[in-house]
Image (cartoon, rainbow, N blue to C red):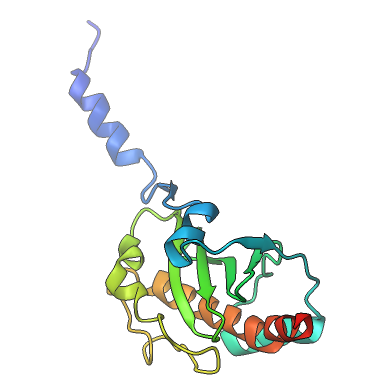
Length: 183
């Protein structure tokens, strides 16, 4: 006699043996959309730069972010605003985010463009992202001090905060000088 297990048993076995925490990649905003969300009506030009090693080291030191910055994602508006796109590791996967800096050197906004983790999406909540708005590039944005933690998304919120600090260093130490040289 041959044993034929019920079909629901196969489903239970599959559920038990499936890898936990599968990645759920989600794209929330395109770069064009984030330009309009942060800087409605401003026209942006993509900027190509080579960041000097001294600036890269300062970015690493002040932010704690060790992996390379995606220096191909920089835009400047004719009004002097900047849109900077970067990525940091969440817990396991990369988080693509944008930081807008207005022509007065203040953070216009922070937006999550892509989130690839299976949990911790709370970092997309407006209440958390608004903590960055209005901060001047000379002010620190430190995790658990100026920027509050999110329970259940601790690593993602910490790493995005560190990434924003990295971009503020880039703006303060390098991009603001490019801006002044054009005038």
